[in-house]
Image (cartoon, rainbow, N blue to C red):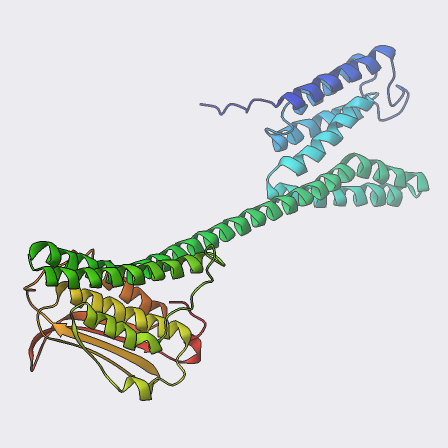
Length: 401
């Protein structure tokens, strides 16, 4: 089955009709480009002029939908017009076909056609001059260039400008897409960071509140209830202070308060004391004070949060016994270890979401460190151990926890 030609564009139809009407007007008034007495007019008279004109006008219907086909059909029509008295509109329509073939045709044709027409222009000037030895013979090359090479070169220039504009538009779209991807990744990373901060700051205090409120409700001892209420109040106040610090991170100032500085390793003593107040038997390794040195702020914050979350988990899940916290600096890394008894808890418990371990692992990974947590055997029995190694080289200072 033969392939159907594509439907012509509306503008091309207008060009074809305009060219046909203009050519008929010139034909009607008897205006031609040559007289019938010239030697190379093989088809004299008015009627032979119509066939090239009609064919060329029909080719204009394909100037954008099938530009190469239009040029291939239009070229014989132009040759036919050359052996008649000639119609100026037929020649003008052919120049438009040449222009459209370069502008709308395939890239290969767009570069071949100007080269071919350029060679024809040179040949049209050199060959007649070599044969007739007359300066007027050079005009054949000039006319050939005006009809063929000029429109082809113009089409190539316009096409190159369009291709450059399209390439610039694509680059702008790609740049905008990459910028949007970077923005999305930055927002996602910031949300993850704030989620870790919120979890680590609030979970410890809320866990203590949940455990002591459960104890106060389950026991009928007024003294025990009073002690539980004191612990609940302390954790509520500290949790509120931590929330204000988080708001200070999100804003330059939270109302009438200034942002509070991020916690450092110097605050581990107070963190352990607070855990003791909440009922944990905690010991802090004194090697921390001699091994600290100059630790980058992101590493300090990550180590502090890992210890804080480990103590929170111990408060919620650990059995009876000693909880140990130790920090040491060796081989270019700050090592953090928190161990607690592993087993069923006798007293009240608080539910866990599992986000704590994920957050600690993310903090270590962001600093190119290592993290592991799980039960293991020890001389004192079954324990739950949390270990993290955080690099303290200069490359870690630029990272965020």
